[in-house]
Image (cartoon, rainbow, N blue to C red):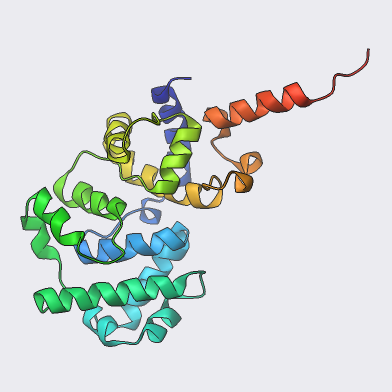
Length: 235
């Protein structure tokens, strides 16, 4: 099956999964987008949205989050594993902005060019290149589908990208295959899928419950190997 055909098949699953568009819509504000996306690295979409909304409702604004303790931020984020690391990132991000800009607002970046946006955001400790690409796509119409390391592994298994290409090149290639209105749901779907169903550790892959296995090159290979190993029945 060609990559384009696999994408079409997977897209149908993505559309059916996210019929309710509010389940995958990302904030438009640059700072909100960074924080929500970072939360999504650690939680599934529903939990990430709930944690993000708790931050917005439990604190007056991002500056109150900044002056709060890491423990207080943790308590609002919830009980997800690695929530301490997440709270530290949010606290450090807001402190960095306050020290650099004397505010906790990043909307000025929307007026900058792509190179300057990258330069500024790369200074932030713990900032992922995938999040930067997401910001560029959402606010600057940058032609890329943001790809994390785990997503890259999953895309290789499925058969959507070439191993020899850089991650950024893979993202630009997928941008050309995935329709504009489905790109963010597609990213959202695989961000979760590559964490829960098809993680980097092959011993933890769950092909038996995978909703896109019929379009997956890796699953086809696994089935073939299983058939070859299966003992032949006596006539």
